[in-house]
Picture 1 (cartoon, one colour):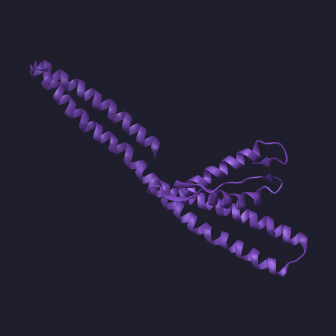
Picture 2 (picture 1 turned 60 degrees about the horizontal axis):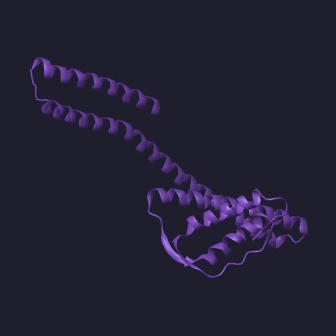
Picture 3 (picture 1 turned 30 degrees about the vertical axis):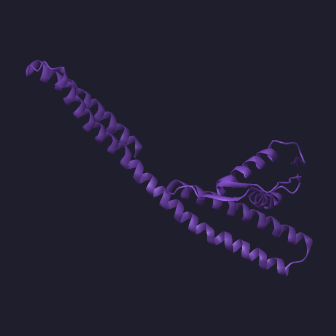
Length: 200
């Protein structure tokens, strides 16, 4: 699709340049117009017209492509939500019927994996909405967001020692976006630290 757009743009550009040069020559040499101000004005009008056509040729396929991509992403998100919730619900049911440590550990791993999928689902949903809507700026307590993220991250990194104490502090920003930043900072800290790190 984009290859055809490139060919069309290049062809139109070459044709327009040739027509513009020929037009200037015709107006100046054949018609005998000596006022370069008039020639420049006519050239400007033609350039603007061609620029509009080029912009339309370039933007229309991109707009259609992103529209279909956004619609596909939303449909995929909707279909992913059901199996994730089904996994979580079944794990909770299985916990009631299994009491041995081995089974509980397996269920815990499944639950963590489902939670990771849910996090990726929320991130993708957030990115799609961010593209089509304005960021939701709100006031909240920073310590609450950090505690929410730590609950999730502790389950992912059980070998990490957590020594984090955050005082109450009011902030005014995008709550979900800030949560993503906190996740990335802590995940990078764990990833690039030696074994059994201490996160402070």
